[in-house]
Structures are given as structure tokens and as C-alpha cells.
Image 1 (cartoon, rainbow, N blue to C red):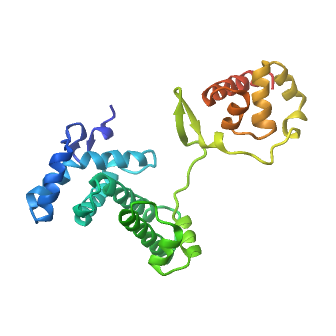
Image 2: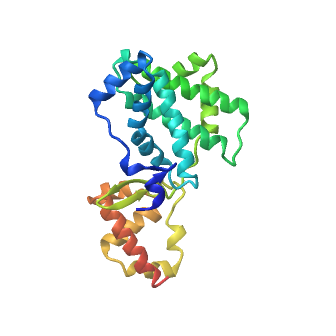
Image 3: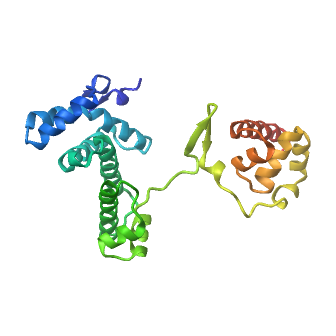
Length: 257
């Protein structure tokens, strides 16, 4: 295992303490009564939660140490603002707080600069969304968030879009039978048409070398712009099978194109 996945901020993450639900409830009651020792134990007992959250942000070139420290700030804020009377699990409340803190850090340190006023609106919107979700027990509507901020709905949408993290088309969505399915595989191309491939004699030659099923998959995917999900439904096989057959077909065609 890589060192960065074990030793973060001088802490051996494989030795982080675990906390069961019963002890968690006991400590939360003590924390509410002002017990500092209980607060310290509770923080240490939830460092694994922070670790699990920051793993979502790996691969962005950020130091795991920095992300872990920022995540701990989010954890502490969650502890300080958590209300045991609502009957909600602490992790349910804490995870969005930790994620929000990490995202705020990433956005503030991003090379893509957004004006302070827009960022402030977005951060307030995120905070109100978390608060409303906690109070209502459901995802709040855009209208409810805008009303809480006393701004227009379009202003909230614009601000949130401005700070949204860019997503790579090569980012995996999920895995099926061991094969990753990427965002690019789910994007439908409405501009795709047969002329883009069929006009090339070389490509036609390559198509002739494929099996009937492989040829049909290539036609649907690249002539008609279907997603792998749509192809799977039309042919009657799994998306993982479509992915494997597509890769094999393209590999075969490259020998002749």
C-alpha cells in the first residue's frame, strides 16, 4: 500500500480507532454538556469518516495531508453544530459538512477564479441547502433555497454553476462485471451520422472484418450516436458486454484502417 494511503499528517490511518453507535451517542450527550475530553475522543473516533470522505477527492493533485486537515475542520464544525434532539445519525449530518469544507478549499485554491460575491452566494446557498435538508429531512427545492437567501432562483443557479467542479469525460461512473463505465460512454451524440464513417472506404473495409454483432454495435455507437446503455437495451446484452465487444471491434478495425 502506498505510503500516502497509510500515513497522513503523521497518523497511521490503519490504526485509527473505530467507534460504535452506542459509544457515539454517549459521547454526543457528554459533548452537549460541555465535556472537553468527550469531544476529543469523539473527534479521534471519527477520523476514519474524514478519511473516507477525502478519498473521493483523490487524483486532483492535492496533498492528502492538506485534504485530511481540511476534512478535520469540517468534522469539528459538524460536531459544534450538531443537534442530538433531531434524531439524525451524526455521520448523516457530518459527511455533507466535510465535503463542503473540502470543496470550498479546492475552489478557493483553483486556478479558475470566480468573483468573491458569486462565491459568497454559492457558499451561502450550499450552507442553506444543508441546513434545510437537515431540518426538512429531504432535499430542499431551488425555490426554498432562494427564499432562505432572499435572492432570485436564477442567481442561485448561476452561483452554483460558477463554482461547480469540472468533470472529466473519462471519469468512471460505475463498474459492471469488473469493467469501468465512463461518462463519455453515457454521452449521446446527436450530430453523429453515417457520413462521418461510411464515406471512408478504409473504415468500410474494417467493418467488413467484424462479426455481425460487433458491426451492429459500431453502427449504433458511432453512426447513430447511441450510448452504451442504449445499445445494450437494443441488442439485449449487458452494458459490460457492449463495452468489451466495442473495444475488441475497434482493436480489429485498427489493423485495417
